[in-house]
Structure formats: structure tokens, C-alpha cells
Image 1 (tube, rainbow, N blue to C red):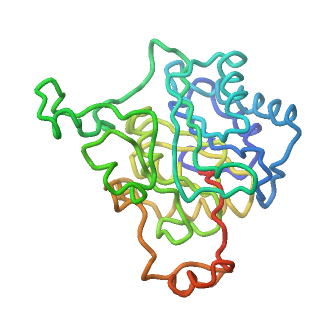
Image 2: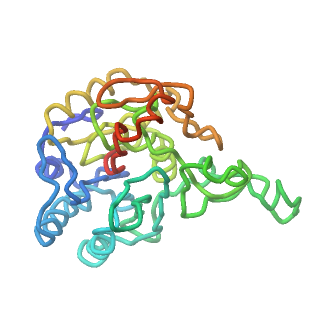
Length: 313
């Protein structure tokens, strides 16, 4: 199977054609089974059917991974516990980290607290031998920069396992010298937005995963292409890549994004605190498919399109 390519096909079929033990990193952001409307996939299976389907493609992921390979899984609350158990107990992986990716401006609900986070599980095949690159993901140490403590590592420290996305909501916190992760959810007004897929992960978040769990020239696989952000980020970071996408339209658009992406090209989205989510107070936003001034929209809140769940790459 040709590398550096997106294939329009079912991921279970595609994974079966990947040479065994050939992939360094898999990042999967599958449908969460919450009823989200995709163009060619029904995202509301019976629970047992969804888990059986996950076990099928999950077995393909495990087969494709190298002995020292890593698998990152993005999943929502509804099936996070079941999938963690499935990949550990049934498919034999070891969970190294359970990362909570938190964001505000999430999905508003009528009879429950707003949905504002996604789970990221970091699995490995061999808990004693796997890639985890520390230098490219270090963050400044508060012990050194704030308190002048000589015990602090001048090279910084590893991030914590909670990632915060909107520092604007707590302007006195989440400064550059703190250790909480955050990346903006890719909202409709962001330049980064691909435009055709309602669920899109930020390149800065994906880059941290790819830098930590793979090296330049190694192979990154995405079974659920979605908006193509995982593959685009992998290409920018000098990795080989391969992906599968069930939708013909999405696959065509992903291919176009990849063709327009160059190795070494800067990542989209800011990693600077308080600049991660651009203000639209004096700009324009999209309402019912049209771009209008944000101030005018604020006077007609019933017209605003509600935010979509961040469930796709």
C-alpha cells in the first residue's frame, strides 16, 4: 500500500492491508456514537454493536503497530471507560496516560452540564520499550521562572495531563510559565478551519502527540481521516503518513489539503497564551452560512449556530 496517501475506504478493510508491525504511531478520533450527523456514517449504533465494531478496527490497529509503537485514542464520555478496558484487557495494550483535553465554548445541553472535554488515551504495545520524546514537548518550569528555585530543571518539565483550551476565560492564569496544556478548539471563525467538516482537532494538539510518540521519517496512521488534520500535521512535521476515510467527499478534500501542505510548513493555530482563540468582537462570524458582523449577531442571539462537538480529526 502506497504511503503518504489518504484512501477512501472502510478502515477495517484498510487496516487489514497494512503490513503487520509496520506503523510507529496511530492516532484515532473515531465517531463517538452520540448521534452526530456525518454524510455517509450513522453515528448511533446499539452499544454492543458499537463496541464490537471498535474491537474490530482496534484489532487492526494493534496488528499494524510496531512492537514499540504507540496508539492515541480520542473519545467522549459516553464510551471512554468501555474503550479503555477494551484496548487494555481485550487487545492487550498498556495505557501510559489518560489525558483530559478541556475546552470551554463546548456543546450546550438542556438537562446536563455542558460538554466541554474529550479524553485522550495513550496506549503502547510494550510498556518497557516505546517512543516518548521529552525535549520537544517540554514546557517552562514555574519552579524556575516564577520562584527562582535552583532545583527546577532549566530545560523545563513535562506537561501535566489536563490540557486547557481557552485561557481567555481565566486571564490571570495559564501563562507561558505554567504547566497546564491548552489548545483552542477549531471554531467556525478560525482561519485554521478546513470548512467542510464540523469536527476538527487543532494542529497544535496533534503536533504534541506526534512529536512525543514518533520521530521524523516514521509512519503515522489515521484510521478516521475526517478533516485530514492528523495527516496534514504529520506531513508538516516530516513524518510519513497514511489514512483511511469512509466518505468519498471527505477523502477528496483531505487529498487536496495534503497536496497543498509542505513538509516543514508552520503549524496553524497559536501556542501562545491568550492568543490561542482569536477575538471576533470587531470582526465577522458565520450565521446560517453567511458571514456577518459579530456585534450585529450579538443583538440577535437566536440566529447563532450552536458549536459542534470536537469529535473528528
